[in-house]
Length: 181
Image (tube, rainbow, N blue to C red; front, side, top):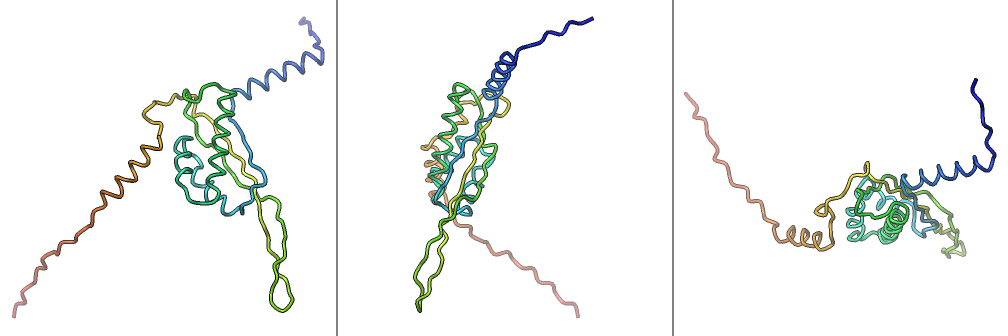
């Protein structure tokens, strides 16, 4: 016969906390940006650009993006990387990707704008909430050559501008069939 040892509730609670901390340390990092004063549609355009990319490439894309939500998402991604470094150690050891990013609608402020003939039109000032999750791809290590720097991106843009060549179409000789009488 087996003997069953009863554990106290405090011991069970402590074991649960330890299991949660281990899971948190090994799992992905979630960050949120709440009440961003931009429409959801505009922010989703930028979020779709970085979904599934490696973190360094996503930062490069956001840095040179002219859309209004790009600087805010860049800051959020940097914050997620700092959280990763705090919980997991050095970032250089892992190949991190933007595993999830989604944009939800936030509060809408309603304002009135004067209209002709004493009327008023309603202006809706929209906001949104952004949730971002970064995770490693199976704990793979990054090679130093795969890290994209700002200088490399600028060099690629300059090369692309200077190497633009015009395509010249050469006329093809037409063969005429002789008609037999």
